[in-house]
Image 1 (cartoon, rainbow, N blue to C red):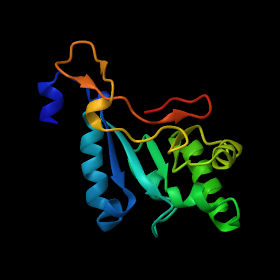
Image 2 (image 1 turned 120 degrees about the horizontal axis):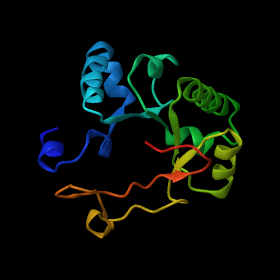
Image 3 (image 1 turned 45 degrees about the vertical axis):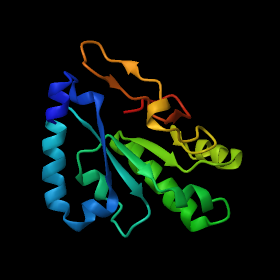
Length: 163
């Protein structure tokens, strides 16, 4: 957090991604640490949702802005009713909790169509943008900052905000 202060960036300029597995190792400690980060204004995203053995209530018990649905869900749910149901349940949970849901791993037009069909508002994957070296990413200026905030490879699929 010293870096944010040094660069004169507000906490909202940063989104901390935390893996579902890291939270599951010690949920109470994770909740406390994430609450501290949240008090600094930093957005929090829970990554790999749907990959582990977590409870569907896990995101509701954490101070989150975003859940990132595990790539395995979108890459295999076309022919798998169970994965599609998990994806749909995660979407419903995100909507009820006021969270942004990101479908990670969109690589085909069919996967993009399915994510949209299930009301996912943000996507990430090779179909939408390929990874690029950090030094080739064009940086956008943040007013009053010493450095710049990097561009994020998330694509809005429907009309909601991206944290």
